[in-house]
Image 1 (cartoon, one colour):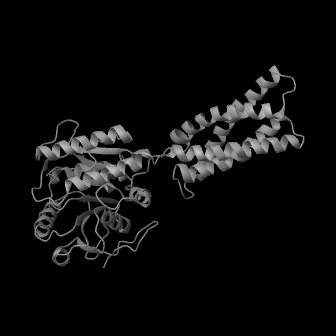
Image 2 (image 1 turned 90 degrees about the horizontal axis):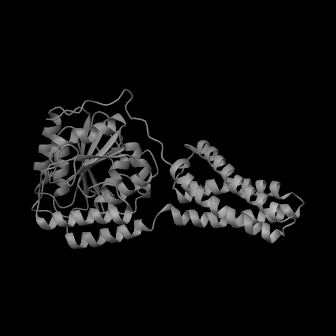
Image 3 (image 1 turned 90 degrees about the vertical axis):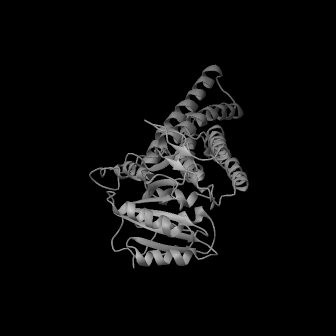
Length: 400
């Protein structure tokens, strides 16, 4: 038995999967709920396609989430009958919950998923995986709405087409989404990227996809899109209206869940501490320039660390020294602005009062705060590209 042991934090015990005799490079998860009629046919079709020679070691993981029919029994039968097929069971429903559990438990280099109906043409799978394997991108998605080089061939009803286009337009307007198709059930990402993103994903259902992509985009990850041919499943179990309402509530939540409010709260606390320290150091007899430099230095380190954890969600020791060194350079910028403001003040007024000094420093500090936010978001805590999981580059991406 091979256990999918998680390599990072996890919120609940992860399922184990069996029936794999070697470590896969790609885990392809099929989340299912009450799919007893279609599951065997789809898994046999996918298994045959992968066995024809896709250039990766692979494993199919059937993730049954709280089915009430014979789906779990069918899944276990497939795992017993087919090599490189595993079945896991979760007691609670939710596509996002199933993907979170299986991806965090995976020992593969790349994790992917596709819908059980196999609406997407499987020939798009190799191009989907190739960019991840080479390090070109960290997340890859199928898109039914755009394509580079060709437009995808999509067969679905006008109602679903309209809803999909409106929803993705809302994502662009409300969240600044730069990906074209959030809900296509054909996605893959590097396993190390999954371990970074998943602990912060809140949704356990259909909005999971959107939240995952928004989180990746906000961290500066590259999202590669592959145009896919897609045929609508006439037996889809998705409740369009309730799902759309849930997704819209998720969009509102993400719209107001940005680093800026947390940065401003940290900045306010830092400014108050900075002003208080300046007053205390001046009262102790230090000159205005030295008092300003010391007060700013003491609060800058705490400010950088607080923004690292709470505003930008960067945890662990990876990159800590580099980020604080970059924060020190941002401190020098703030020091130049505040010290310059003091110099101008003392040039205009020979002996300004402490209150006036503090007021000028607070104004200069606010200007520095705007510069600090831009620097922290675009430079200090901008996500650095991850190395490819395979030394030596990409595997060839063949089409079948």
